[in-house]
Image (cartoon, rainbow, N blue to C red):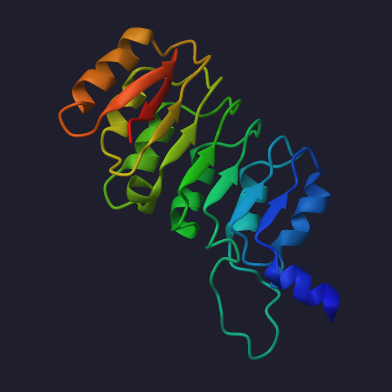
Length: 195
């Protein structure tokens, strides 16, 4: 009984570097309603596994009518180093309406189109995202900065070590945003809203 109570109250789960076999336990109906999930560098965690993780559990017990994702309350998601594509980002938009912090650093398949998907009209992430880490995403370019202008709540954009993002592009973003929201470059390619 005590173990069950602890699991039910669990809000932060750090599984960075674990195997998919360990993380897959979250695909069940007994998964706690987490606020922070860290699955950075989890071996074997790709789009298909993310679908299993984000989809509503299939092992509902009789009388259990909740068919929503058990990860629907996640506000911070760390996916650094995973071999995921835009398929996963669409699942995140669908199943994580409260997501505010997203770490996609070192994700080789993340592109400008990925950012376009996250910031498109009608997506929850367009309004909920406050922090995004895209450092070392080498397929992201200055075009992504144009898409971030759509995000009303964005406060922190990390584009450090993105080879195709220019300092000039970041400076232009700061200048264009200054009409409505003040941003500053606190480090090269690291943008932060001035509070």
